[in-house]
Length: 314
Image: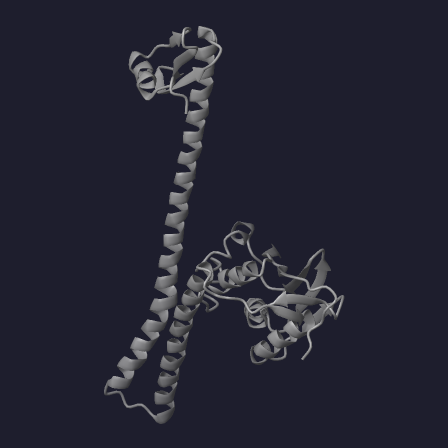
């Protein structure tokens, strides 16, 4: 801080709206003028500049300040729009994903409490509806809590060397009941490929991608799971032959509670699976993304760090 460039002199220049050149002290003060507006003032210590140079420099600084302000304003506007969009998405999730099971449960309980004469099969069906919808609500709350913990960094990964082949097998075992007779193709260029990962968390990511592919494609269409090595990462992909994802939605599907506009009322879900998968992958230092073509299907790919020269021993 230079004592000769004092705050009082800077304020005085703004009040006078004119330059002040003090050759004896080798200081200059000038307003930062943009048209007829004064945005502030500047002080320069050292060789005395000409009046024209000071005015030009003041104008350039004023333009830079105005541009920075405009950029900040645009950022705030975009943030506000994003906030409103997220509110809308959250409201949609609450309306559909919470209200729907509550409505089903309320209808079932009301029927059971009424004087309607129900046989044992009808009573059991209503109780099953209540049970399933309770599980659905519980899953939504659980996923929201898991997402919050992941974002807060409260989940500690237990990363160890694991072969990708083992990871894929574990995920397929978890999904076995839901896959039924659907053809599953596994393509591994290097069966010994090993990653450093938390097995339970990495399996959770792969299970979600497999279940997504299973839900969004016809049961007779195959799902292909592949893995390849690129530099220091293993890239694991899940490809389906489903309806594909619109280009405008590709950038949104990893957002919390977002579900495809054409699928949200056809396929059950909470819209939390992909954001959770993204958070888990990024906690491992990897990335996740999707390539999709309408009418031809989607390929979700995530990466995990490779372990060189090691395999998992069991």
